[in-house]
Length: 306
Image (cartoon, rainbow, N blue to C red; front, side, top):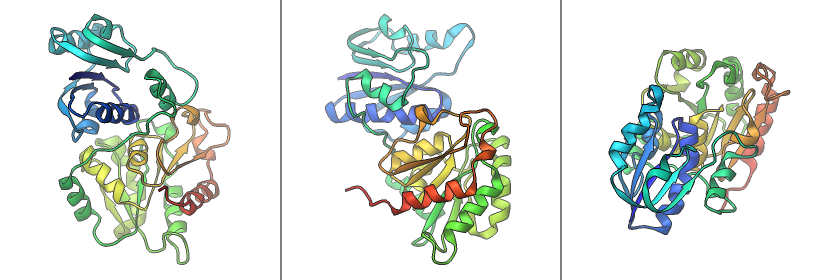
């Protein structure tokens, strides 16, 4: 069986789509999958079972990236085509079945829209794929028995970033004697590039030798293994937040200008801390340390799912 899965450009949306892929893998364990996604999201699928290959779609002027995709897949016959980009492309392909996401913004959780595409209620939760080698790399990066707190103080837009000093204060509060994660160390994660490095720099400087700098230094499957090793992740609304939730690690997402009703982290143990007046443009600074700390403690106190 041959399945073409056309998914997102951004990491977060790509991670949310992994639940559908996991469902299809379980339904069709002998199938061979071809995944088409944006360059940033390629690593989300690098360790995916049943993946024949990944087609990286780089946006071109005049939508010429669709022509490039046609050259790769247009002459082939498919058993199933899933198009989450809301394009007309899937209707041009020869396939026995197709599911095409409706384009445009829709109210409600993104993960529910994905599930509804295939009539799945509740929708399948995202998954994170990583290998034994990735797990060994994570153990080398985060040595010892822990505990470790993963922090994601970066985002693809500076308005979504919680102030660095509050990340530091939250870490201090959670790791003080008698607190839930007393004595924990921090793993600081972020994407590549100077902008994300600059966002993380004040947190790294403040925590010194209590923190490990992983910003832009590891691939997405390694990041997933690192997140799975953590006792808690706290981060801005970002692809890393969604990846953490997919691993099953307790994940606290911090929300200001982005819409929590659409993009709250989806996983077995998740929570959100939402700035007053969210989703107002400049609301992130109004999210207090006390709000985030209370949400983190409540999340850590929840029983682990069976």
